[in-house]
Length: 131
Image 1: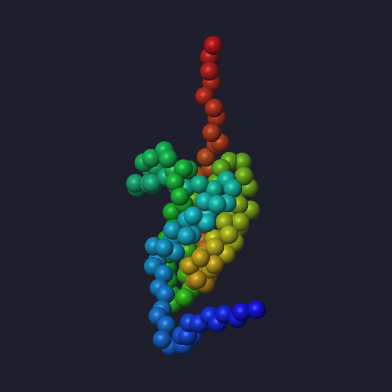
Image 2 (image 1 turned 45 degrees about the vertical axis):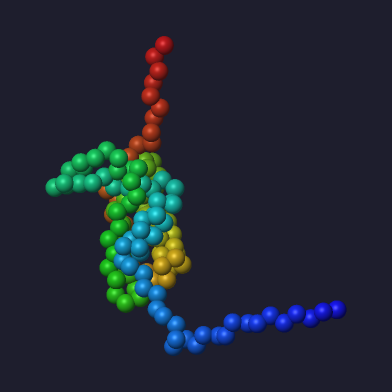
């Protein structure tokens, strides 16, 4: 029987390690993606003076604004919820899911997740075919 010794890399002490910084826009992207993972949730149409200026809003990612205070973030999410899904229950699922994903993927503690529902789009109806 032959024994082989494998050299182990030396342990690096904590003070010699660098730091990891996660940009605010990365936190916003993670939060937007996490919000869109909840069934029935879509994005918000771009608005100009309160009027929707595009019709692709539900197909976009939800809009997210991030406020960072140290390692804690506050999120404000604008989204749409497909009709007839229950708005309050869906918004609560979005809050929970976004907080979990941001903490897991970005390493930030989530203090507040504000959800603003800007539209209740109807499900897509297939076009009628006349024969």
